Length: 167
Image 1 (cartoon, rainbow, N blue to C red):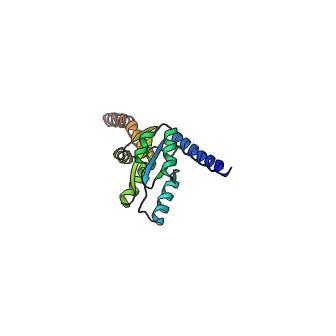
Image 2 (image 1 turned 90 degrees about the vertical axis):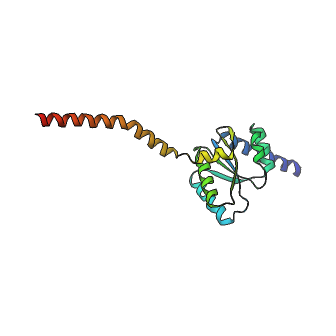
Image 3 (image 1 turned 45 degrees about the vertical axis):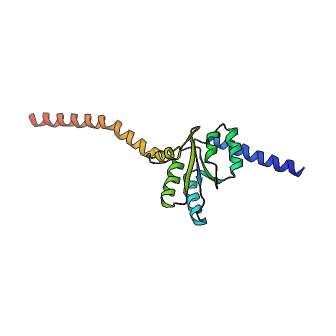
């Protein structure tokens, strides 16, 4: 009876992780071996502030969840101590935060990621982390869209000033 309860609780844990893998827009897997408690606490704080869930999970549980979510390509990254960051909103945020933290703390190693249902490599994670934030991209787009209107307004103003001087 107790054995059945243990098996059921493990299956429930696999189901939870599977649903997180399916629902998150960005999931980053990292090796946290060598980080001290203060460093892990700081990393968790940064991720929490960005709305990212960060967990340390057993590799066997993760392998079962990746099999259920049809993301078995991620299994090769599931060796050694594994921490995983799930983001349901921002694709870039987990990669950016973990990559920046890894630059400051050599002990943190990025191992792999799933972005919008596609498994990506460590190099692709780092490239994704270098992208500007969503707000930065929106401000760039806005300035590009405003440029023609601004130039037109300056041209109209120049014509109006020229006519005033001629009159």
